[in-house]
Amino acid sequence: PRPEVPRPAPRPEAAAPDEAARRQASVSVGYVLVPFVVTDRKGRAVPDLSPADVTLLSDGVPVAFDLFERSRDAPVSFAILLDVSGSMGLVGKMDRAREAIDALLAARREGDDFALHVFARGEVREVVPFTSDARAVARSARAAEPWGRTAFFDALSKMPDRSLLGRNGSRAIVLLTDGIDNASHLSREELSSLLEGVDVPVFPLVLKSPGTPLTPLPGQNPETLLDLDVLGHVARLSGGRLTVATSAQELLTAVRSLLLDLRSQYLVGFSPTGRGPVRYRRLTLRLAGPARPVRVRAGYRGTDPPTAGGPTGEPPARGKSEKRGKE
Image (cartoon, rainbow, N blue to C red; front, side, top):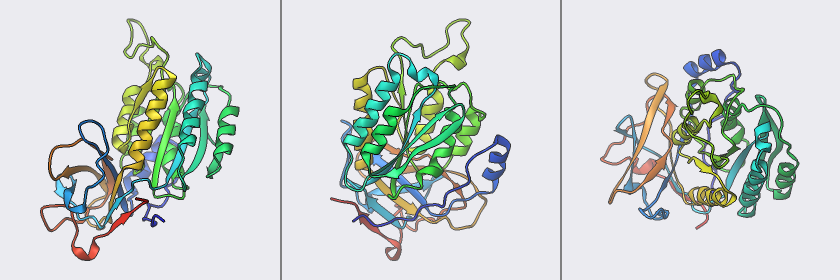
């Protein structure tokens, strides 16, 4: 069985923007988990990295990590966030979203668990708490009816904490939406600020009607268009991936891709030192050998990290830990 890994304690949900800003100035994280995915130039996962191959940097300075884990085929906790606003009822978008959820459930592995949340009009409702019962999730997704306006900025800001209720160290937030936010209290900037340092990858799957423009036409209000720039930024911050799908096949391909990412990711971790100011710190990853694409969370909010004593991010031998999922 896959060992438990430390996880940060849940933070209070974001409420009003001014309160969120106040919290952000004072909250630090505990243990920092950094999931990452490495692929070759053909998009295939690279499965055989060792701690010596990986240098983790915080603001350009090597970090001493004390956890290194290959999470290949390890169980995942999926927090599904389904947009049930009125616009999802148009041109079959809700049906395609349900098909994507069915595909995700059909590909489940032993130990996976799923939670289903729906949102509209700024309200996020947990329909199914984390469970291994795929049929319960599928039934609830089929019963969801589109209504109201879209407030996915507000909804998305609450999901990292809710994802902590899953039982697995590997987690993911899967957002199914048509990508048009017209009711959030949070601004784009406030959402990005709240999600800085989030340690769970966000995978926005955007259901786009064929012919929908991605830039404003003359005289058109930009707010009526897809908020792709925001969703893309959230995906990059968290180490996830944005997909825009105009057909059921594209959506199913996106589900397969995110599953491949999650089944082949690595995980490194470290404890901040408690020294220095609490602030946002950018994370990057450097690999030994040939250049390869890497997808990793963009940073964390907290105090100074422990610095590595050598040329790589590998910690001293007493702190080194290499843990595996199912091989």
